[in-house]
Length: 73
Picture 1: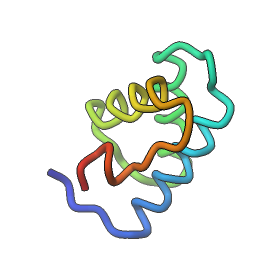
Picture 2: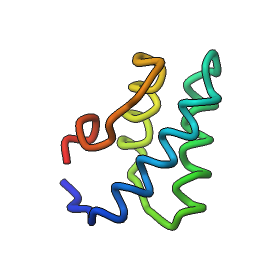
Picture 3: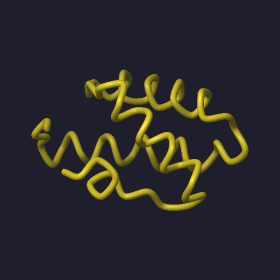
Picture 4: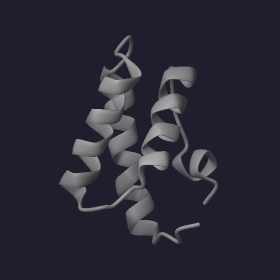
C-alpha cells in the first residue's frame, strides 16, 4: 500500500472529478488514458492497478468517486 500525502490525494481527487465529469459514456480504456494524462499533469504517480480501479469506479458510479474510498487509503 502506498502512503500518500493529503496534497497528493487532493490532486488525484481533482483529476478523478475532472475525468468523471466529462467522460460519461466513454470506454474504460479512454477513462484510463485520461486519468494517466491527468495524474502526469499534476505530478503524481499511480500504479496501473490504481488507474484501472479508479476507471472502473468512474464507470460504475456515474457520479462522485471518492479516491480515498476507492483506493483504500
